[in-house]
Length: 226
Image (cartoon, rainbow, N blue to C red; front, side, top):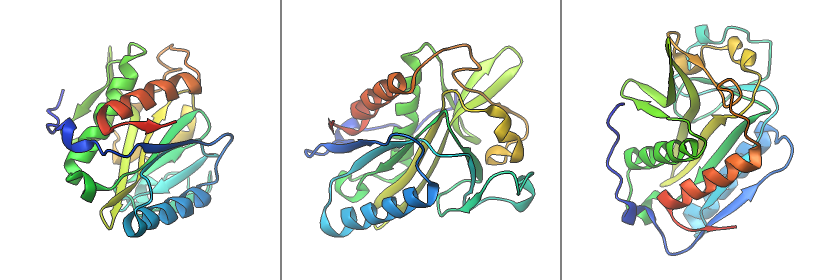
């Protein structure tokens, strides 16, 4: 397992609870981006509460700032959205929990590296609840799961920071149609595949994952107002 940045938990907490929102159904991606940008501005300029927002999206691809055109294998398969987050191409769709994280790094005295390490730890701790051992890699972003012939990615991370406030976040594969990943080279990695709870033979409902994810996030980033 790659060594992660040391997390000073005390520096991650703020006295004011983080606001939680869980959206039912499928949230259109442009709507999600617009809402995130509005909330980031309100947090940065007016001191609005930090937020953890859990959503699912209809099938789509997103292109990060490092995306390579050749990695979009099937450009007409699903809508493709350019986004300012870091990383390359990713897939979002039903059966995948997306967590958008909007926290104020200025108030927390954190840098981006510590924030990403916090997201990694959150995912690893949430997976552990269901007996899944998630690992980081020095040369690859995301959380990886080993199997008998190699390893596959079960969760992706891609963030953006504006005026010291984060947005975008992470995505965990619960039971998405993994064939939908075939339309891209996920995160530019060709040597490894993607996996999910379902592919690992673990039946988990979205509310069950949410509970584990919220608890893990709270343990790393501080109290959540449910």
